[in-house]
Length: 324
Image (cartoon, rainbow, N blue to C red; front, side):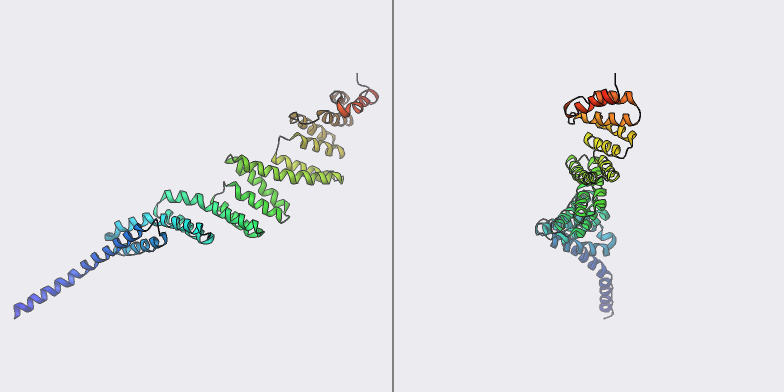
């Protein structure tokens, strides 16, 4: 009788000590099963895959050392699963949900050292923010558009598209100062990444506005204002001789003859065969004449003896300056 009791006691003790081992084995199996379930549906159902992979991760973290292998395997798939789920949501045009998953992909890829997924989502996220900005712009929600464009820039500051989007949004809000600021940023960023198309877009938009506004000021004889706009245009394009000529004309109207000469010379330097240089030389001759530099004035007028400026240049040379 005593022997039987002793056997029962030994069995009970053995069961008590074996229970944690059995439970641990069961838990390891649960972690592995959850991982396998997630991995098997990753391609077709990334949402379900995420549910199983996070379950495997939770169980394996409780197991500490015994769950290390399964934990590492789950962590290796979770960022990719978030990215694939994001792409499915994108196809369904669920933009906010897509961004949420991409941000989770970025966060987990950073935490788990998945550099491949991290590089991919860092390319995708700013593009998606930019697309959302474009959508808000088309719907004339310009403040929302600017917010999305700014988020794109926060992720990737050398991406010219959202800078241009912000500039165009400010244009629609009649905020010329901010528009020009972001057009200049667009140009600088586009040049830094050799995006010639975006650089040309920025230059065209900025010059169009500045030359129109400068011309309007000039017609109203607001020559100082005209100079400000034309000078600003040069920040976007230093190769347009016609703008330097406009500056020379307006400085002459203000009787700032040294400046008129300076910008006449720049206009000639950048004429590129597209300008009537006779007009530029005539302007330069007039400026030199008012500075009392008659020799230089005669030289300038001699180069203006063509086209519609011929008669006026001859008169200045023969009747006024008595050039040799």
